[in-house]
Length: 151
Image (cartoon, rainbow, N blue to C red; front, side, top):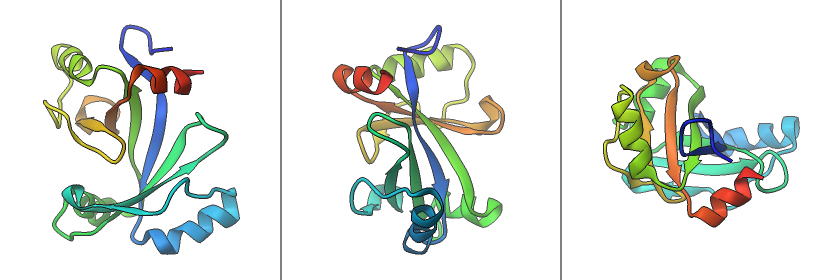
């Protein structure tokens, strides 16, 4: 299933930026009953620590907690200026390059014109000025995974 007129699948995850993942996880466990689906990982290239919290049985959307590891990173600047909260919304796609071209042709302001490595595959971001002040992430998934998540 894709969004009408695009190659985007359903929402993959919603990312929340936090000061400290280890301090935040107990609240997500206590209040929402959510557990990470894997250990907290560090992505040095993005200067973040992160984990994913499934909101239901797979392929349900997930919450991604992200914590900056470098005070000069974009995520750290975001946290300093806006505080903890919503960072981005992510959609899956099977053809990231085609979606970037389609969005660029439609007038979207792209943060990334070419994909970059993400925690689960190639990703690219669309600037918040493009649509309602929200940072949008596109995550490339293979066709089988995208179909599974679309059910």
